[in-house]
Image (cartoon, rainbow over the protein chains, first blue to last red):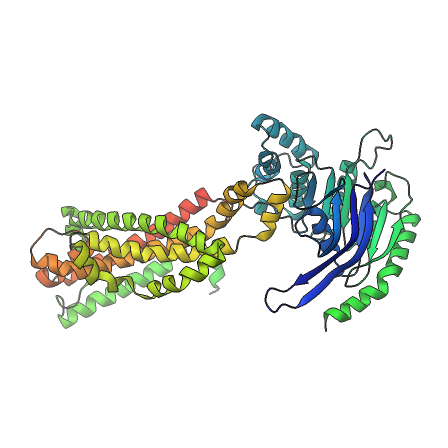
Amino acid sequence: MNPIVELRQVGKVYVSARDGATVEALAGIDFGIRRGEFLTIVGPSGCGKSTLLSLIAGFNAPTSGEVSFEGRPVTAPGPERGVMFQDYALFPWRTVTGNIEFGPQARGLDDATARERVRVLIDMVGLRGFEHRYPHELSGGMRQRCALARMLANDPTMWLMDEPLAAVDLQTRIILQDEILRMWGDDDTSGHRARPTVVFVTHGIDEAVLLADRVLVLGRRPGRIKEVVDVALPRPRAAMRNSPDVAHLTARVWDLIHDEAAQAITDESR
Amino acid sequence: MNAQRLGRGARVALPLAVALALCVVWEVAVRVTKSHGLVPAPSGIVAAGWTLIASGIIVDAMSGSLERVLIGFAIGGALGIPVGLAIGSVPALDRMFRPVLDGLRSIAPIAWIPMAILWLGVRGDAALFVVAYGAAFPFIVNASLAARWVDRRLIAAARALGANRWMILRAVLLPGAMPMIFTGARIALAFAWASIVAAELAIGIKIAGQGRSVAGIGQLMVETLYVKRDVDALVFYMLVIGIVSFVIDIGLRRVQRRVLPWSAG
């Protein structure tokens, strides 16, 4: 089967608007994302993880190479590629319901259909009773659930998630990991339901291994593919949080990026 | 005594007691020095206030001034918000018009009064011009900042959710700019209220000389100064001007909390 997303020799150079200085964020990325897989991306800070995600989302164009989605070059964002941002990016002037409704409204769905969709999603992410709250009245975990529901409201075939759980506490993160897995279809081993394709950028190596079918390990700037680690562990994964297999793979991925991560720290302080 | 241990009653009562004590000292000082008439006294201010309220003079003057403030404020907003949003979101427009606008902004609204009187006459249009002029700039400044500072991530989120340009403008840029425009409105209204008093004071001299009926609080003050020489009434007007601007600001904040409940104004 063709990959849903293809990255061909993708490079990205940022030019500073102030002094014209250039930063090479990504170089020579050649990779195909399989339909329905849960792909996580890890790497030392500043390795271009988020840049890669925003190229797939269509917020930026690559400086070299090509990014294609379903066989067509990506030129702009689209509702079939849902995005979840690190710091939520919820609309502060919209309530929980209003935020989730945004996608259906933008796509011109009629009110009744949109409302029913929102109602289902609010139940699914456990925000019943908070529908009329504004984002600033929600806890971090609830905001993240709202952002998840907002992304799901468009039924995207791809979920592009940029460190979605970086800003919540550890317990909340574990609960949300389980929920993301469940909504993706972690416990559906029948293979009848088509799972969405997930690209999940994270700093957490254990999280990356636990959730993923494959872990894409990027090297230090300019970000290149260092290794692709297959996580050939059975699903559902939610039950495997403490399994030695997960711990073993986590240690392996950590070995891959340890030196680079240490180097990145000294680079940054220079 | 620990300030935090003060009860709710004491927190209100103490400042009131201080104010009251100051008034008593003031009253006694004026009476001992027999300077009442040149120096206002609290008792005189209360008496003057009572007369002015009972006769309806203060209400007439205030409603005249307030009407002009609100019309001028509305004109300032109608001109300032679109101009501000335009220069805030289009860098080329900003480069073209900002120097001119900054130059105009540096001219105190009051300095336009002679010109305004020449063009528009003393009946009130001149004051209205000054008020609208003064109110327009806070709207321009804040609306342009609001347009420039709209969170790019929110625009990205809207695009990823399938929003077209029109929806981004209507559902992201405009609501995102509202809190700062509201802050601009509060500054504009404070400017407008300050300008109207100044404008009416300046224009008022002429009106008072012609013995015409009083049009606003500024004219009333001029008349009180030159014709009646009533210092107690003057202080009463000052108090009313302060109270009105305070009430207006509280009112606008209430409106903001009502209209934009998500922005902790």
